[in-house]
Image 1 (cartoon, one colour):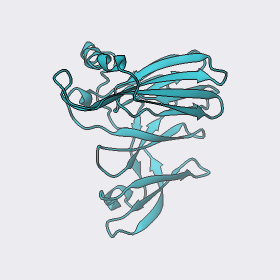
Image 2: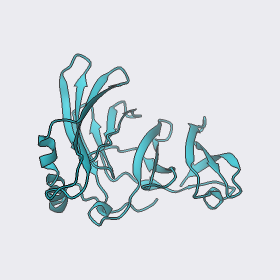
Image 3: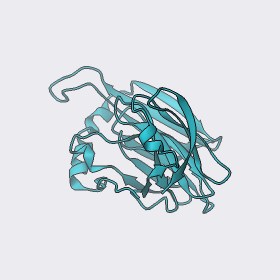
Image 4: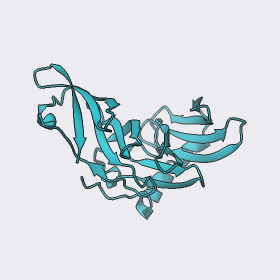
Length: 225
Protein backbone atom coordinates (compact mmCIF):
# COMPACT_ATOMS: atom_id res chain seq x y z
CA UNK A 1 0.00 0.00 0.00
CA UNK A 2 1.02 3.60 -0.65
CA UNK A 3 0.51 6.37 1.89
CA UNK A 4 -1.96 9.09 0.88
CA UNK A 5 -1.36 12.77 1.69
CA UNK A 6 -3.34 14.03 4.69
CA UNK A 7 -7.04 14.71 4.07
CA UNK A 8 -7.87 18.42 4.53
CA UNK A 9 -11.48 18.30 3.25
CA UNK A 10 -12.91 18.85 6.74
CA UNK A 11 -10.36 21.29 8.11
CA UNK A 12 -11.01 24.94 8.94
CA UNK A 13 -8.22 26.06 6.63
CA UNK A 14 -9.81 24.32 3.65
CA UNK A 15 -13.25 25.68 4.59
CA UNK A 16 -11.83 29.22 4.48
CA UNK A 17 -10.09 28.45 1.19
CA UNK A 18 -13.22 27.22 -0.61
CA UNK A 19 -15.31 30.08 0.82
CA UNK A 20 -12.98 32.49 -0.98
CA UNK A 21 -14.62 31.31 -4.23
CA UNK A 22 -18.21 31.89 -3.07
CA UNK A 23 -18.56 35.27 -4.79
CA UNK A 24 -18.11 33.59 -8.19
CA UNK A 25 -21.38 31.69 -7.70
CA UNK A 26 -23.21 35.02 -7.58
CA UNK A 27 -22.33 35.65 -11.22
CA UNK A 28 -24.63 34.55 -14.02
CA UNK A 29 -23.68 31.07 -15.28
CA UNK A 30 -21.41 31.27 -18.31
CA UNK A 31 -22.70 27.92 -19.56
CA UNK A 32 -24.93 25.03 -18.58
CA UNK A 33 -24.43 21.40 -19.57
CA UNK A 34 -26.46 18.30 -18.85
CA UNK A 35 -25.45 14.64 -18.73
CA UNK A 36 -27.48 11.46 -18.39
CA UNK A 37 -25.84 8.98 -16.01
CA UNK A 38 -26.63 5.40 -17.05
CA UNK A 39 -30.20 6.38 -17.92
CA UNK A 40 -30.89 6.68 -14.18
CA UNK A 41 -29.87 10.19 -13.20
CA UNK A 42 -29.43 13.63 -14.74
CA UNK A 43 -26.42 15.75 -13.80
CA UNK A 44 -26.84 19.43 -14.62
CA UNK A 45 -23.65 21.48 -14.43
CA UNK A 46 -23.55 25.26 -14.14
CA UNK A 47 -20.23 27.00 -14.80
CA UNK A 48 -19.37 30.44 -13.41
CA UNK A 49 -16.40 32.19 -14.94
CA UNK A 50 -14.30 35.22 -14.08
CA UNK A 51 -12.91 35.87 -17.53
CA UNK A 52 -10.64 38.78 -16.67
CA UNK A 53 -8.24 39.34 -13.83
CA UNK A 54 -9.12 42.00 -11.29
CA UNK A 55 -8.32 43.22 -7.81
CA UNK A 56 -10.79 40.93 -6.08
CA UNK A 57 -9.56 37.80 -7.81
CA UNK A 58 -6.17 38.22 -9.50
CA UNK A 59 -6.45 35.37 -12.01
CA UNK A 60 -8.96 33.99 -14.47
CA UNK A 61 -10.98 31.22 -12.84
CA UNK A 62 -14.03 29.01 -13.34
CA UNK A 63 -16.09 27.26 -10.68
CA UNK A 64 -18.99 24.87 -11.13
CA UNK A 65 -22.14 23.69 -9.42
CA UNK A 66 -23.61 20.25 -9.98
CA UNK A 67 -27.28 19.40 -9.49
CA UNK A 68 -28.11 15.70 -9.51
CA UNK A 69 -31.70 14.88 -10.47
CA UNK A 70 -33.89 11.88 -11.09
CA UNK A 71 -35.00 11.34 -14.68
CA UNK A 72 -38.31 13.02 -13.86
CA UNK A 73 -36.51 16.15 -12.66
CA UNK A 74 -36.60 15.74 -8.87
CA UNK A 75 -33.46 17.19 -7.25
CA UNK A 76 -31.48 14.54 -5.38
CA UNK A 77 -28.35 16.43 -4.37
CA UNK A 78 -26.35 19.58 -5.10
CA UNK A 79 -22.63 20.23 -4.77
CA UNK A 80 -20.10 22.93 -5.61
CA UNK A 81 -16.75 22.38 -7.27
CA UNK A 82 -14.06 25.05 -7.17
CA UNK A 83 -12.88 24.25 -10.69
CA UNK A 84 -14.49 24.20 -14.11
CA UNK A 85 -14.05 20.43 -14.40
CA UNK A 86 -16.66 18.15 -12.78
CA UNK A 87 -16.60 14.39 -13.12
CA UNK A 88 -19.26 11.91 -12.02
CA UNK A 89 -19.11 8.13 -12.23
CA UNK A 90 -21.74 5.71 -10.91
CA UNK A 91 -20.23 2.52 -9.46
CA UNK A 92 -22.27 -0.66 -8.98
CA UNK A 93 -20.51 -2.14 -5.99
CA UNK A 94 -20.00 -5.71 -4.85
CA UNK A 95 -22.00 -4.86 -1.71
CA UNK A 96 -25.12 -4.29 -3.82
CA UNK A 97 -25.15 -0.51 -3.43
CA UNK A 98 -24.50 2.24 -5.91
CA UNK A 99 -21.88 4.92 -5.26
CA UNK A 100 -21.41 8.14 -7.18
CA UNK A 101 -17.81 9.32 -7.42
CA UNK A 102 -17.54 13.06 -8.10
CA UNK A 103 -15.32 16.01 -7.24
CA UNK A 104 -15.49 19.26 -5.29
CA UNK A 105 -11.95 20.33 -6.22
CA UNK A 106 -9.58 19.77 -9.10
CA UNK A 107 -7.69 17.46 -6.75
CA UNK A 108 -9.18 14.63 -4.70
CA UNK A 109 -12.62 13.05 -4.88
CA UNK A 110 -15.98 12.67 -3.15
CA UNK A 111 -18.18 9.59 -2.87
CA UNK A 112 -21.95 9.55 -2.39
CA UNK A 113 -23.80 6.47 -1.14
CA UNK A 114 -26.91 6.56 -3.31
CA UNK A 115 -28.91 4.51 -0.79
CA UNK A 116 -28.88 7.32 1.80
CA UNK A 117 -27.14 10.25 -0.01
CA UNK A 118 -24.36 10.46 2.58
CA UNK A 119 -21.12 11.91 1.23
CA UNK A 120 -17.45 11.63 2.14
CA UNK A 121 -14.69 13.73 0.60
CA UNK A 122 -10.95 13.53 0.26
CA UNK A 123 -8.83 16.56 -0.67
CA UNK A 124 -5.03 16.14 -0.37
CA UNK A 125 -3.10 18.61 1.75
CA UNK A 126 -1.03 19.46 -1.32
CA UNK A 127 -3.90 21.78 -2.37
CA UNK A 128 -3.15 24.29 0.37
CA UNK A 129 0.59 23.75 0.01
CA UNK A 130 0.34 24.79 -3.66
CA UNK A 131 1.85 21.48 -4.71
CA UNK A 132 0.79 19.24 -7.57
CA UNK A 133 -1.33 16.14 -7.00
CA UNK A 134 -2.89 13.52 -9.24
CA UNK A 135 -5.98 14.77 -11.11
CA UNK A 136 -8.69 12.10 -11.44
CA UNK A 137 -10.35 11.52 -14.80
CA UNK A 138 -11.79 8.13 -15.81
CA UNK A 139 -12.72 5.45 -13.27
CA UNK A 140 -12.85 1.64 -13.79
CA UNK A 141 -14.16 -0.74 -11.13
CA UNK A 142 -13.74 -4.52 -10.89
CA UNK A 143 -16.34 -6.37 -8.79
CA UNK A 144 -14.16 -9.47 -8.56
CA UNK A 145 -11.64 -7.84 -6.26
CA UNK A 146 -12.94 -4.33 -5.47
CA UNK A 147 -10.11 -2.70 -7.39
CA UNK A 148 -10.75 0.84 -8.62
CA UNK A 149 -8.44 1.97 -11.42
CA UNK A 150 -8.29 5.72 -12.00
CA UNK A 151 -6.78 7.35 -15.04
CA UNK A 152 -5.54 10.89 -14.72
CA UNK A 153 -2.42 12.99 -14.67
CA UNK A 154 -0.31 15.53 -12.92
CA UNK A 155 -0.93 18.95 -14.44
CA UNK A 156 0.40 19.17 -18.04
CA UNK A 157 1.97 15.70 -17.82
CA UNK A 158 1.11 12.49 -19.71
CA UNK A 159 -1.79 10.46 -18.35
CA UNK A 160 -1.17 7.64 -15.90
CA UNK A 161 -3.03 5.22 -13.65
CA UNK A 162 -3.56 4.85 -9.93
CA UNK A 163 -4.99 1.78 -8.22
CA UNK A 164 -7.26 1.83 -5.17
CA UNK A 165 -8.96 -0.59 -2.79
CA UNK A 166 -12.68 0.16 -3.14
CA UNK A 167 -13.84 -2.41 -0.57
CA UNK A 168 -15.10 0.31 1.79
CA UNK A 169 -16.11 3.23 -0.45
CA UNK A 170 -17.19 5.50 2.41
CA UNK A 171 -13.85 5.29 4.19
CA UNK A 172 -11.48 7.89 2.74
CA UNK A 173 -8.79 8.29 1.70
CA UNK A 174 -9.11 5.07 -0.24
CA UNK A 175 -6.10 2.77 0.27
CA UNK A 176 -3.78 3.03 -2.74
CA UNK A 177 -1.97 0.04 -4.22
CA UNK A 178 1.36 -0.39 -5.97
CA UNK A 179 1.24 -1.91 -9.46
CA UNK A 180 3.92 -4.25 -10.81
CA UNK A 181 4.53 -7.23 -13.08
CA UNK A 182 7.24 -9.81 -13.71
CA UNK A 183 8.79 -7.70 -16.49
CA UNK A 184 9.52 -4.72 -14.30
CA UNK A 185 6.63 -2.70 -15.76
CA UNK A 186 7.27 0.42 -13.68
CA UNK A 187 10.91 0.80 -14.73
CA UNK A 188 10.04 0.11 -18.38
CA UNK A 189 7.66 3.09 -18.70
CA UNK A 190 8.65 6.17 -20.64
CA UNK A 191 7.39 9.16 -18.69
CA UNK A 192 6.96 11.03 -21.98
CA UNK A 193 3.96 8.92 -23.02
CA UNK A 194 0.56 7.98 -21.67
CA UNK A 195 -0.24 4.84 -19.73
CA UNK A 196 -3.81 3.75 -20.50
CA UNK A 197 -6.27 1.29 -19.00
CA UNK A 198 -7.35 -1.46 -21.43
CA UNK A 199 -9.51 -3.94 -19.50
CA UNK A 200 -9.73 -6.25 -16.53
CA UNK A 201 -8.74 -9.87 -17.14
CA UNK A 202 -11.02 -12.75 -16.18
CA UNK A 203 -9.02 -13.02 -12.96
CA UNK A 204 -9.54 -9.35 -12.19
CA UNK A 205 -6.02 -8.25 -13.10
CA UNK A 206 -5.58 -4.92 -14.83
CA UNK A 207 -4.38 -4.84 -18.45
CA UNK A 208 -2.67 -1.59 -19.45
CA UNK A 209 -1.16 -0.13 -22.62
CA UNK A 210 1.97 1.99 -22.58
CA UNK A 211 5.08 2.96 -24.54
CA UNK A 212 8.40 1.69 -23.31
CA UNK A 213 11.65 3.62 -23.31
CA UNK A 214 12.27 2.48 -26.89
CA UNK A 215 8.93 4.02 -27.91
CA UNK A 216 7.38 0.61 -28.55
CA UNK A 217 3.68 0.24 -27.66
CA UNK A 218 3.09 -2.65 -25.26
CA UNK A 219 0.24 -4.21 -23.32
CA UNK A 220 0.85 -5.96 -20.05
CA UNK A 221 -1.10 -7.43 -17.17
CA UNK A 222 -0.45 -5.56 -13.95
CA UNK A 223 -0.70 -7.14 -10.54
CA UNK A 224 -1.80 -5.13 -7.54
CA UNK A 225 0.14 -5.17 -4.29
